[in-house]
Length: 258
Ligand code: CAA
Image 1: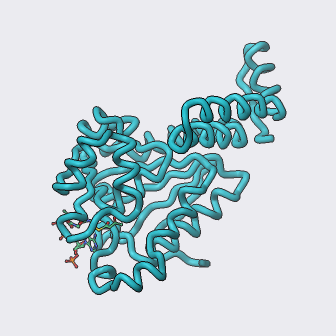
Image 2 (image 1 turned 45 degrees about the vertical axis):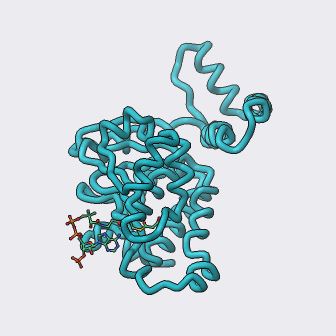
């Protein structure tokens, strides 16, 4: 893709920001928007000069879900053969740390996209929900799994079975989001958080992401073993030498990402 129409993709320092930009449709996730988000994210992920990616929307909507107008006439055969939501596995396979900066509606696929990131930062006006049941479907971009892992069975069941939304404060209490900030500060806070992460060693941040994500896919013993192996691998990097030398010499570390 050479020019994006449904997203804005910008870079500042070592931080890339993907802004969903279909204001008239509250950033509904159309096929085109899906293609563009994944195209941009994959490009940034491969770029050694990018240390963190922010995905965000507008103050009114992070994303109000998959595009209902596109889906309304879909048949089972079309959905299944095209595997319309399977493409998001390319996004969840990204290895660069990703922050969702969520203001306004994060519903259905919007909530699911937010949860595909590594950290969710929420504005005080954020609203999370899986309202698919009201449309006669169930979540399709991982909501039934990621929401349950994030907030537990009872709360996730209530949300998925009734479609009720959850405000930012409740989302923070439930462990869905890392932090709540005033909506006016969301972009600045997300940029600062991303810049902090991007200032770390990229390979080490990737190892850290891999280790935390393993907690969702493995037994405790397997996860702890993987963590230990990855920890030992850190000692093969120049950034480990630099990080520890800087501590001993009482100066800030300058990581070279190798
Ligand atoms: N798909 C397509 N268009 C959408 C949309 C969606 N998910 N959400 C909002 N829009 C459109 C509306 O149709 C409307 O367009 P028009 O002006 O052309 O009518 C425009 O965005 C503004 O929306 P509203 O007028 O409805 O705005 P509002 O402020 O009154 O309400 C809202 C906001 C509560 C978010 C409401 O728009 C809404 O309920 N949206 C649908 C939410 C939803 O059901 N999401 C789940 C989708 S299914 C899914 O995501 C499947 C999956 O798991 C992958």
